[in-house]
Each structure stands twice: as C-alpha cells, then as structure tokens.
Image (cartoon, rainbow, N blue to C red; front, top):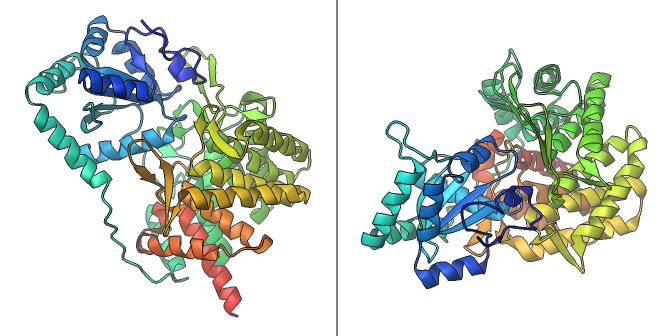
Length: 507
C-alpha cells in the first residue's frame, strides 16, 4: 500500500500512514485519478483529539471488508481539519445544506469524480444500528447507485453546489445604532443561566467572545447586572471541573450545567482567549482571583503546550491518564497565545520577554519571503493574517518597536488585498469554491470579526484610511447584528467600539 500520508506534519494524518485503506491527501493527484478511473471520491475530515474520529478509525477504517470496498470502488482522501480549515468549513456548509443541521467532527463526504457532493454524514459506525445503515452497507448502496443511477447523484450534487456557489446577496441594511446596547442587555437576560453562569444548555463551552461582549457592554453602560453575569460565569467556570485545578488551563467543554464532567481536551485557542477575558475582568474588578486563574492558564500553555517559543495546537487526557499532545503549530492559534502573553505582560512584565521571543520565532517560521503560512505546508487564511496582525500590534504597544507596527499594517494590507471584496471577506480561495468568512463565533473566534478588530485598533496609529472597510463590512452584516447580536459577539463588540468612536468624533 503506498504510504502517501507518511512524513506529513499532521499527527492525525500520520496515524493513517499504514492504514488498510489507500488514502490520498487533499491534492490534484487524487482528483486526477478519480476522473481517470471514473470513481466517486470519499473525503474523511477529522482531527487528532476527537473521540469520534478515533472511534471511526478503529471501528470502520480498520475493518478489512470496508477497506476492500473503499480501495476497489473509491478514491479516499483524508484531511486534518486544523491544517485545512477551509476544506472543513466548506464541507460543513455542504453537510448543513444536506442534513439541515450543523455537525462537528468527523465529517464524511461522498462526491462524484467531478467533485459534486451527493451524500454527507458525520461519524459512521461499521455496521447497522437500528434503522441507520452501517458503513459497509452504505458503501454497497452508493456503489450500486453510482453504477446504475449516477445521473441522479450528480444532479443532487449540482443542486447542493448551486446553493453554495450562489452569487445572489440578500442585503437588508439596517441602521447601526447605539440602541443595540438595549437589545444586547435584553438578550443576555434571556439566555443567562442564573444558577451556574454561562449562556447555553449542555454541553457548555467557554464562549470567550460572548463574555468579552458582555464586558464591553458593561463598560459602555455601567449596568452592574452585566458585570455580575460575567463575574458569576467566570467564577463558576474556574471553580468547576472545566478548569484543571492540577495543571491549570481549561478543558474544551463541560457536559453538565454546573461545569462538571468535562471533555478532557484542551485547545490552544480556547485557553489563549479565555485567559485574556479573565485578565480583562481583573482590570475591571481588581479582584486578584481572576488574575490568578488567567496566569495559571497562561502558565499551563507555557509549561505543557509549548516548545522552543512556539505553541502546540491541542492536548487530550486519555482514559489511562496519559496526556497526548498534538505538536503541530498553527499560525493563527500561536498568534492568539502570543497576544494573551502581551496582554498579561501589562500586569506582570515577566511575560514580556517570553512574548517577544515567541512572536519573533513565529515571524521566522511562518512569514517566509513575504508569504504567510497557516502551517508548514499550507498558505495562510484570513484568520492567520487577522490574528497575527493583532499580535504584532500588541507587540508594538508593549515594546514601542516600530517594526512590529509596520508588520502589523503589512498583515492588514495583505489581508485586504487577498480577501476583501466589497464588504465581504473571503476566508480562502479554495480549490472547490471561494469560501467566505462568516460572523458567527460562539465557540471559535470569527476571522472576519478579528480583521475588523485589527482595523479598529490600528487605524489611529498609521497613515491610510481603513474606516471604509470597517463600515462597509458592518453595514453588510447590519441586519443580523442589530437583531441577533449574541450570535456574533465578537463582531458586535467591534460594532460597539465603532459606534462609540463615531459618537466621540461627532462631539
């Protein structure tokens, strides 16, 4: 079996290098072979610390009968979602269109040799469970249908793509008004868990963007109820099982409303962003409890998730209490961690040198000959330019080194050149379609909102008028922002800052 996934930087892909299945990575070789042999394509997307991804690997992909069917009748492609968030996001859209709901990992997609998707699923068990087909039976159904009724499958795929590739924009511009603060306050009251804090049912995620918007809303209204919601949530989280009392750092989510029974998986981006939220709360309240939790979280990232001034992506405490760490470095996630370090250095300067060493190392390994990279082999997406730009700006503020400011502006200029399009922002220019960034960021920060944060922060410091990019983007999304502000909390926070500055300028 050809070892096409061998020597990849992804631990997730490396697990499949000796697989029974003849896996391809996402590349032209796989697509060309599918066309030449007129075979359907099976795409499997996951990541290293996902329980269901690992379960599917052991149950389905190590089954000899399933492997034989895939090898004889399909071109199989394996994708690490952290390396290729563009592919992951694209197929999540496909899945939602086909199934009417969102999905996490894994994602399982079947396409024609011309890349028309006709079936999508998440985890697929090897054998039937109730009325649900097992993987083996499903493959046989698809093989039969592809051989005998291919046109129906292709027509279905084309219909799905017509929605994905639609060029029609439904723009219902709504007046951007500071009265949005009243809507925000009302919505927070409706969703707040008064007993345990937080803003969702189970499972409960950290939702740092939602908390950040809550703090900014308090900052602008001085409504003590808003600050109380934030402090209650942060206190309950820190005292709950979702916070690791031994090593520090937060787990990804809790399965119970009281922040207990966590999934013992830690993501770099979660810990970087929630650490900043705790520090912001400490600055507002002067309660050292929040500072201590933030520093324990940052120290966890430094001690358990970093090496040679860069940060690893995620870790998982396994059932045997062994700690597995995915050692790949992702530019956007490293930039989030570095930004948290600079934020912490405003309170304790012991973090300053660490932050400087980290951003200099990230510049060295990720910004090569004027090209930014997401990982070692993958060129950067909007989120990389956005977060790296923010981190570079924080480096400038901490050091007064003009080079960091110049580089931050360079990241912004490159992002505008590559991704901006009349108020919309592309996440990437993918092989399949142009993937646009969205404004939603309940569990993962929005790349589009982050680039707007960079514009809002850097504009007073540099020459050049970036306000038009900010206004056009906010205007294009005004309908959703003014009606459902908590669905896109980071973008809503940018809107509050924009409106606040606009009011000041008009005085």
